[in-house]
Image (cartoon, rainbow, N blue to C red; front, top):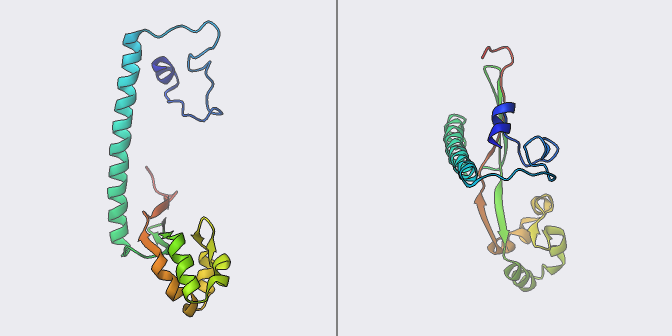
Length: 167
């Protein structure tokens, strides 16, 4: 495995279309066993790669937080915001995660005579059908809000770098 990475200057991912077991030295017939020292080296290499991956993700999130601050992003916003900054296009998409208490929403709907609206407003896992929810009259949605927990999710990013810039 380490020979494969060194030879090809890439690490095979878990997408079987991108590499074959034979390329990586995992040939089913005539398999050469890997001795304990080599296996241990592989385990160490894997653990180090996972550590680096975690550090890189933390650093990326710190950078994203700085970008969010520069864009004037407020936690709890929902929707997309795109800016063109020196030819770089930065798009931030924020969503709010909503969790529905199925028992509570059904009980509240029954109390307010709104049971007939549940199939349109919720998917019965239940999930909110946001298009129908936003289009519905507030007299219907307001009482049902007590059964919904809303919290912001982490914004996703898309950055297209200026192609005229060197680097």
